[in-house]
Length: 52
Image (cartoon, rainbow, N blue to C red; front, side, top):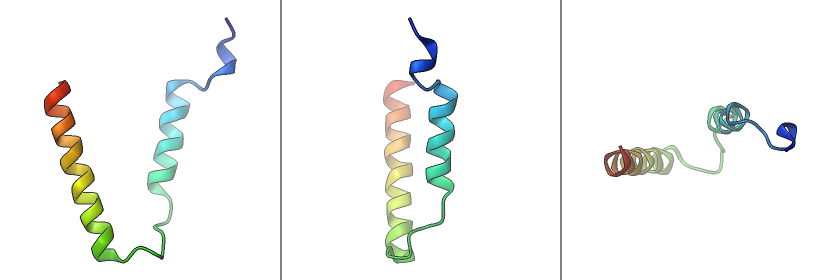
């Protein structure tokens, strides 16, 4: 079994953080972006309540 063939969980998380911390897209108006973030937080809270 080759351990190096797949990225480790830490590497995957770092990539996700890089995507989240990147510069916001200028195409998305701030009003819409804030609504999207609110929905993501809401869904995240629901998922945590279901699975934790």
